[in-house]
Image (cartoon, rainbow, N blue to C red; front, side):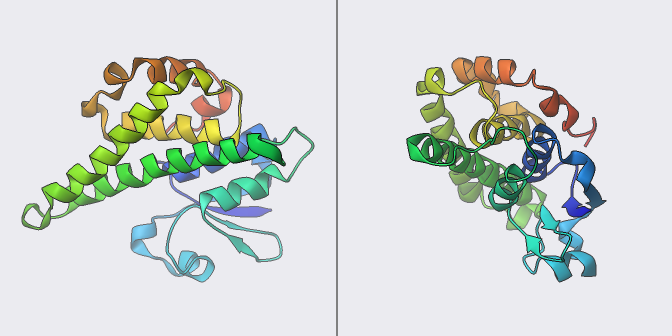
Length: 203
């Protein structure tokens, strides 16, 4: 069995689990609920960065972070790959994943900043992260017609990033400001693996 250090609300974990489901290897993964902020011994043993997701292979080898884990899971099973093996399609998909991961990174940083004591918070820092998200969403809005509706590592990453904005930054109303992207997301969200990996209500 593979072991995955897991968090229900981590967008990076959700991305990994969507790939696992689409590749038909979810039943090979033992999910260990892990709070990376507690830096427990089990997580630190496997990932000195104290981050999730972290995947432990059968031979004890550990893999992190989400792009690496997704590519490993994509190599398993008999189903068609989610990441093109070569050519421009591969680089375009990896580029989309990088944009989506950047949205997640900035969104998570905003959440963490909001959790600091009021006297320690930086409005400039939070605004910088929000601006990065908005610029990236605007770019994706302009190119929404060219974003594939198919399941790839890039489109999975994007759908998860937008879902995390719904979860943690719903007040920003990204859907109203970026309607083409919202339309793309609504269609993509019909995939079973997206619904199955949704964070529990109230989290």
